Amino acid sequence: MTKSIETPVVRKPYPEFPLFPHASGRWAKKIRQKFHYFGKTAADPSGDRALDLWLKQKDELLAGRTPRKDADAVVG
Image (cartoon, rainbow, N blue to C red; front, side, top):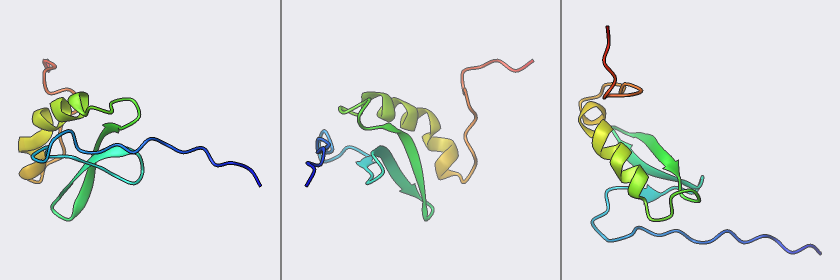
């Protein structure tokens, strides 16, 4: 029998952290009955980059809109 490779368990950095580690290995948040993902937990175990992305996209997601790819980009 072969040994399985165990992936490290990632947990929320603190109880009030707005995202959770999804079973797919990504930081996630459920908004309006749909999961939204904010990066892989393996690449960002502390959740810092995922939290930054959540804060940039939060207003549009909560309003039911699809967030822009880069909110800081100038159009024109």
